[in-house]
Length: 308
Image 1: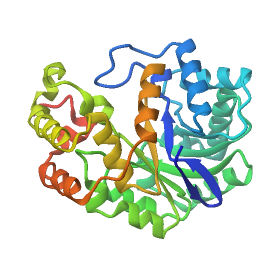
Image 2 (image 1 turned 45 degrees about the vertical axis):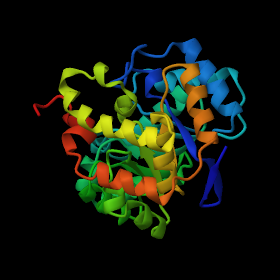
Image 3 (image 1 turned 30 degrees about the vertical axis):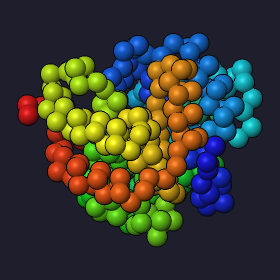
Image 4 (image 1 turned 90 degrees about the vertical axis):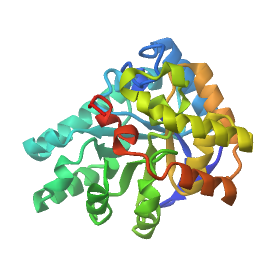
């Protein structure tokens, strides 16, 4: 399994996103919430493959508890757990934040977290000195090692990369969403010694969907899936290979989140990832030209329910 080194720690580049463990998630989800037994099988598999980082959140239904049940019965020597919380937790000051982190630790059955991320940017937009003090104090307790935020646009990214208390920035990046490249998010994070975690690699499954399966509010995405299939055919890739390869090639020092509903999907993703080779200049140029004008109502899932 490919890995990256950041601040003296070696993390597998592929990171398991666990929202499906607690919720029926994803536009292409056909199986609903992953069962407890299947979740445990997925965790057994990914750890056996050298994946050592999990991404979860307090808002992911029972995801933290499912992971905690797994750790209660299984010894995993090296694991880096990232969870996320709402900015609203900070309205109650340090005590509320600390209690919220402890609740996640209890659910996950771990003594500490690799990181806690803000699940939204509200706190980032109204950051104060008292916020810095809360975060610094929380790190000092050793309950978390790092603090970060999940961002959605350039304004939020700029605030995050310039904030000394933010260590990790989770960003959207995929074949249809090139903002990270246009705004140099990877380079700026590297210069600031911050870790990038890429989410939405498959755009909640949209990039893997057959055109006839698109829901009504995403029918307009068909005009981009067709040229995507043409690129796949020309260069001999499946959609899954192309999607993973694109992100892997252009985010060399970042963690890449992937989710799965079943063990077979986990096996498929890991197998593809282990056999990826960097994309050449010709195909990267084709992708840049073909998908440079995609609108936010396609690449931003929060806008999928809006009229187009």
